[in-house]
Length: 235
Image (cartoon, rainbow, N blue to C red; front, side, top):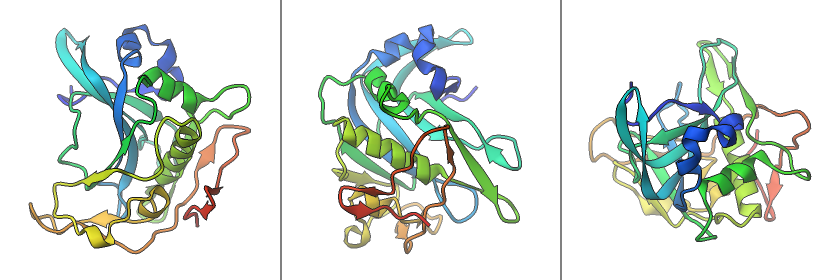
């Protein structure tokens, strides 16, 4: 049992999970787009919501206070595809030390809840469901591609719904940041790679642009590649 989170759930089913109702009802005070160590040279991208108040949940007879929830296309066991978009309740709220870089966004609607964010991603009758996604593995050894693709589609949807902004308000890292080469606009920082020299306090190294590789959205979903007058960095 991981001390930092409780059992993952599939994002597509989260709204029907009765035990998660207290989390879904909690207000979101800020969000993050985060880059953590991935497979190969590219970092793994995820989206995370920080709760206004901690929510006490029990798992395996032990109580945990949930302070945030992450959503990501996490690698599965298959050698070819990743099919699981997970919703992960977490016991930490602020930037986590495992992240290369955490880009913080303000919440545009002060009363928006976790349920509002999840509903936005699942869409309505006029919108496609973004809670399902299949990413692929390429190369030898195979490396998972597509996490930045689905995170980009989520941020576009949440910005369209006026739940969060497009420009990050702050960036956090356990490594020393050089602000002159660290963009805050989403379409710019999602294109970069992030790494370091493995020494605590060393510089966060920002690579040249790495084109985003697409995965497979749910049937009928349309990928947005041009938004707010800019072209997103797709391959």
